Image (cartoon, rainbow, N blue to C red; front, side):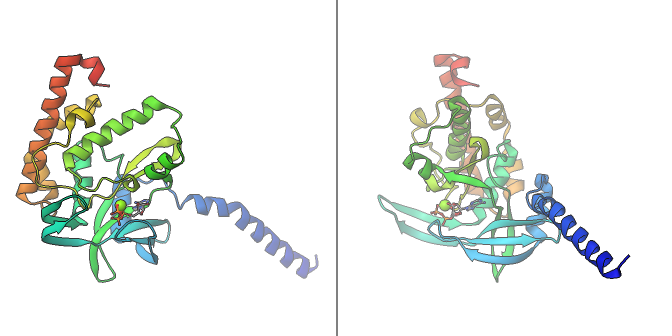
Length: 274
Ligand SMILES: Nc1ncnc2c1ncn2[C@@H]1O[C@H](COP(=O)(O)OP(=O)(O)OP(=O)(O)O)[C@@H](O)[C@H]1O
Ligand SMILES: [Mg+2]
């Protein structure tokens, strides 16, 4: 056989192989990793590209990380602002903190109460000379602000509400002073994600309008809330939350549980728990 023909054949064969393999290589970019594998990836993978986000007030960085096998984006937030007083639109906040550390604390708390499927994995990492939180980039379709603007209704109202009830409980527990609509993201099949907790963990021991905000509760979540242990929370968040911040979480936990117990007495369990 003409050696030139044979070489061309090999080249064409190799090109075809590349075409077949390419989708597999791309699919590996969105792997079915466990939470632990995602944590390790975020902690150790090399940053191969960086770009400032257009969205948000603090414009966190969108980084692309690669460990040679997996390539995935992550959001890097390094804000760590502490002020005695902070003037906000309608109020003044004392002992104001806006810090990436609360992103990591929120994820740790979500793990303790079984809500970590609602948050991207957050770890602490140093990049570009700064320490910050790094979260696994979520493939989302829109945020809650865009959904409302476009007047889009989720196809399964019950499934949607059940996710929202859980999120509201979490928001009360962490006392987020900035729970805006760009921090609620909507993914595949109307899966709801909650991100950005840099202004959470306020010191208040009160809930924010529980009558309006806490209407129903997932059964398992209520059990997990009851079982939440101050020592376990202290241990898991010791680098990120002060004693007073942990105390405030526990006080709000007590009030959330009491609130639902009262509601159950008043309306019956089936009206309140699902
Ligand atoms: N892990 C993630 N996956 C997908 N998108 C993300 C992620 N983290 C952040 N984003 C996107 O980047 C935007 C800004 O991020 P983030 O909310 O952390 O910053 P911010 O400046 O603190 O925002 P805010 O305006 O709420 O104060 C988010 O609204 C969201 O659209
Ligand atoms: Mg935000």
